Length: 108
Length: 115
Image 1 (cartoon, rainbow over the protein chains, first blue to last red):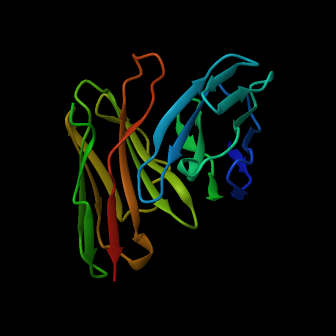
Image 2: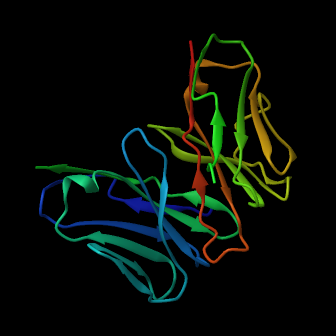
């Protein structure tokens, strides 16, 4: 069936290093959302991307939507310990299914 | 606004018992979602409702699971009989697709342990 594949599953970085997670779909997406879940918490909305080739920034976070609207990425510049958590993409094609998530740990 | 409210926050039960999880969505939201989260399977969509009507229940594991939304302010997810493999965190989320993003607002979750 239609799925969104998210990689990597885990990422461990040293504080100050960059981090990127990717989501890839076999079908064109109408839009894609990104969420962050802190350990023990619930997913919290970060952003939605709608337009082909769209790039949005939130402080150290950069979100991209591919030209074909089949892939997306979240990049964090100079990670901090507060960035720890699991980052999920969510496919919004009249359903709301999450990717597997990328768990980020940051070593101080 | 109080946000999405789920109860109970934690439940420990024995195999074979009935479990009922409850959710109160954000007032004015017209969509409600039930997700299950485990380490092995991640965040799985179980079912979602638009305007109190079930739209997609293809994620409901089997006949032991049922969900209802009798009105716009309340939904239940019932497991009968429960099994140890049902142990997970169950999240309810609501959304309003009339807003710009249709972002999901999650409750704190109900952590279920079936012994």
